[in-house]
Length: 209
Image (cartoon, rainbow, N blue to C red; front, side):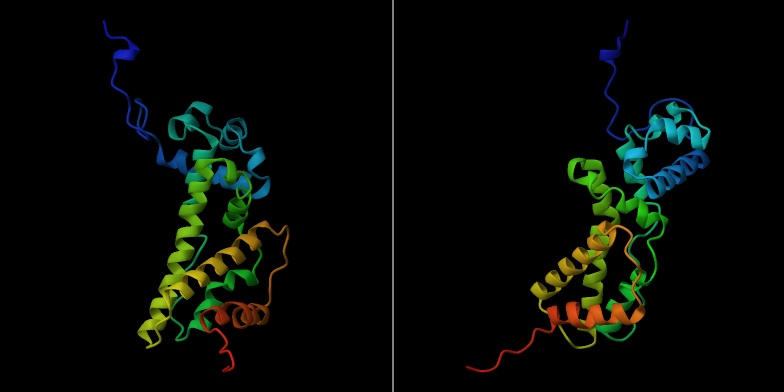
């Protein structure tokens, strides 16, 4: 007789045995999770609320995601938080386009992500979700803007590009954690780029002596 302890362990992340999972229900559960996170916050995301809104069984949730943090991490991957702008011909214009979201209120996906920032300090899944959905794409976008500038004949020092990426990321976190910030005007975004970001890669020359 084979006992449960004799069965080979299921690989991490493998789907439990049973009927194939419905992709339509999966999408519905994720949409509900995003809605709860965006409108009510991480503290209100639980299997009872998700199941009730999706009109699904809790077992269907846990067949897909072992925890609410795993569900939230998956939900973060469903909508882009960083959009790489088209090449506009200059680093200044590219940075302004990268920050174009700042002229609009946080959308639903951004509000969902913002609700996880504090809790992510204490949860590996949430932290990994923000890393995958925001930190890496943002760093990649800044590197791409620097590569465009290099293709225009102006190579930026690696250290300066890394510092620019850190500054952009810090500004992004500030946008997420400042409660109810009013959108900036296009002129304000342009001033932010000119006065704060460009000087990082265009340091002022010190006078001789």
